[in-house]
Image (tube, rainbow, N blue to C red; front, side, top):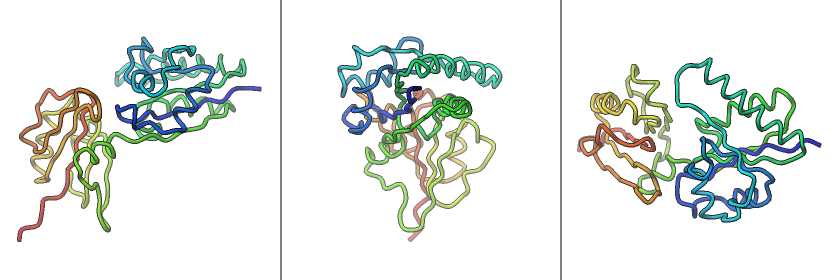
Length: 231
């Protein structure tokens, strides 16, 4: 029988935020797939190792995903990654692909999942704490209340659209265009917070737009709420 591919979220950074199910599946897995060229250098691996030291004894499979916008190249890499995992699944081994945050939110494993499922392989997803929920908790900031809407936006792909919907915006993938994102936020008139490297040892918290540096790191997440009504 074929093995099962699991997309397992390990949370935003703090190993204590991993779910019990994620810990169990990593302990039981035959193979651990890790995004990146060197599994032991990957952020997801370091998070998982903090809760499951036994991961070091597992068969670790690097799954390289280049950060490029060439869709043809990206598709090629996704198919290569799927073929790599199929080799283990065909041998009857279960594969756990560990990923930051939650595997249903802008996750590279999604593309591998589509390929595997289209070819009849069993895939299961295991939710993890998302970066924006962890960031809101770090800020002691409710994301939404009562009937407010929540908009989760890949900011780098939405720079040409105003942030004019009611409710709260979560801006992900902002770092590479941070200067432009900040200008977009300034024009919106919203109250802004940002957490960089949430729950990691080098975490930084910014509580206003003016505090946010143009050279913020890759793991930077912005929360923008509507301006408080004038009294």
